[in-house]
Image 1 (cartoon, rainbow, N blue to C red):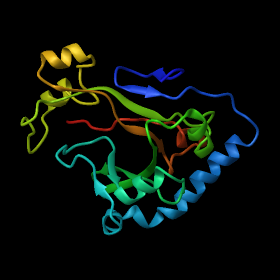
Image 2 (image 1 turned 180 degrees about the vertical axis):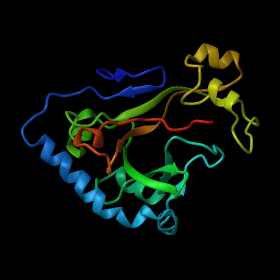
Image 3 (image 1 turned 90 degrees about the vertical axis):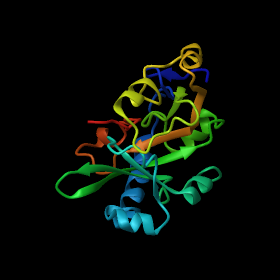
Image 4 (image 1 turned 45 degrees about the vertical axis):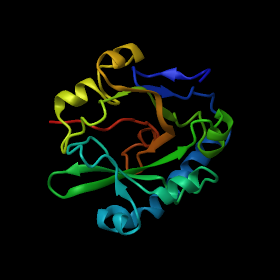
Length: 204
């Protein structure tokens, strides 16, 4: 994790590399391909029909809903196809239901920065990992995750050290999942397209 940047207690970001000629065009090309490819998934039923499933369905109110494909995630470990994102990102539009806002790409946690950069330039995008995570004790899962539980445990919880997690009886993970990056495909400005906002679970 040398050279990485912490962004809060639970998020580790790739460093921002200096922009080089061609970086912006290469990133814009990825977004353009993705935008065309996922147009059919504006209807979440179409995404589900193609094998995308909601991540953490027990969390009923999320800032961003991730619909992930196991097939796409496996493919992403070995090659990059901008038209096949690991996850589709939706927001809850109270008037119209779930609204497609972007996609997420992934790579293994062991991937070097150079490999991440070859997929999407590190001068344009900041890949992230979820780190220092404490999950609730086994057997404490609930049909619907409560506000108190998410305030204490998980990727947005207060517990951010191994010692505190052990004291709470939780399960500690130095990191969860691999590298990931969000692409806000339908943002109003080009800069917002690549302004990653990791996380996403919240309760009202």
